Amino acid sequence: MALQQELKAIEEDFEEAYYSRKEDLESIDDIDRKIMKMHWGGIVIECFVKYLTVEKYSMNKMRKSGNRKIAQLFSDYTENILREKEQAGYQLIKDDYDKYAFKLSEGHDFIALIENKLKFNIPKEIDYDLNIVYDPLEYEEGNKCFIDLRYESEDLQGIEEKYEQWKKSYKKVMIWLHSLNIEKEDYKKDTVGGE
Image (tube, rainbow, N blue to C red):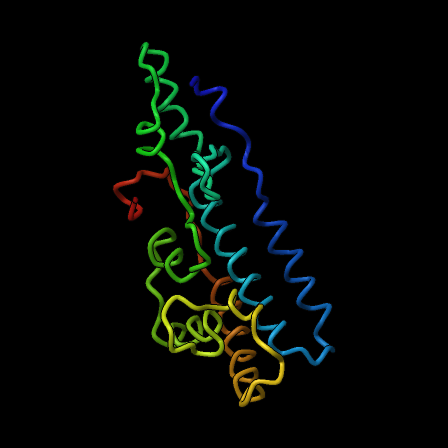
């Protein structure tokens, strides 16, 4: 299929989503719903990290990849590589898009995005806090995070202490994320921990 038909403007506005979710979180500040706040706070951080990532690599186009929920993202730089191949008479196939696509992630792991896509070394003093925001209840089973809080009750044992720690960690993480200097660069799969 032709490049022009495959690539569309990115549907998600991660910056707007970040500000909207942050406003939502602030609007429930006076409500005694700790689980909801920790769940929503993780979503705020996830949206912000995805916004920073898309900004860093100037992603502005997307392509839906089969039936999967994840979209492949492209910048002008990567779109031009594909366009040059197409103009040279090459018929683009799925593997070509896969080769040059940028994938945020299929899950909600904003820590992996920070490390692998934004390429930031997480300071030790922030690592703990990131993990608390990502997994506020410190689930013992693997692959659980803030998203899974949607299935938890507000009356969990020890929730007061966990929420107070989460609140401190959330504030530290937000300050740290806003202090990062995001330098724009062209997305080159081999330099970004490509998939």
